[in-house]
Length: 320
Image (cartoon, rainbow, N blue to C red; front, side):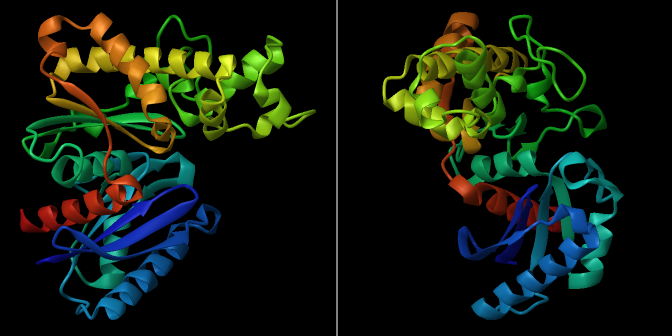
């Protein structure tokens, strides 16, 4: 089949797209509305998929569907075991979507499918061993080797954000202290900046932009903007974040020896402000033989990576 549908479920919005070969022919975003329960979302996904197919003149039985779901997934059983952001536990996603659409459906973790899309059609295209990380609300990673995702025992591989580092003081929602994602994430970047301005009293344009009690509204995007203004706090935060992320990635590179490390996700929009210290940290911590054979690059597909990876995964799963 040349047509496949990708569904990228997020905590706030769900992106749905129709892939025609290697091109996203049509896409739409709908609110996830997690509080309404999974069946409400499945009904709206079904309606959106059918609408996209009508718009593009594609028969409803001529597609496969792949779905990226956050959290711990049993991809073989087609069940979302624990998707905390969605308040889902043991939800039979594949069975319920097959009932609605009547076509092959497959699911996997959303970050894995984001990296899968980048590995096949994005920044990792043509590369055998791809390690990808998404720096968003949290931090997660996935490895694609010779076109196949690596899962590990219990399909739990890739939780790079929960490597604890002694230099990180923050307690993580998982219960550990020092998890990498408490700094190397959009929320972590914003928290570090707030601490320096509010707790340590550092002078910063961020204080001017968020006067009074406004600092809780500060985001990682604001830190990047302040960086471009030459703000010392913003520069320190992004450098520190990049150094810590580079440390975590150095551990992963030593374990898996990828050919390329790609960095995506919302916070990765900081670009070289973040990637430059990532590379410096990795080069300092890696044996030269590793460093000299890899490249560290930004993801290339933008917001479509999750749609593309999910669609390709669904297609490939149906072909197996």
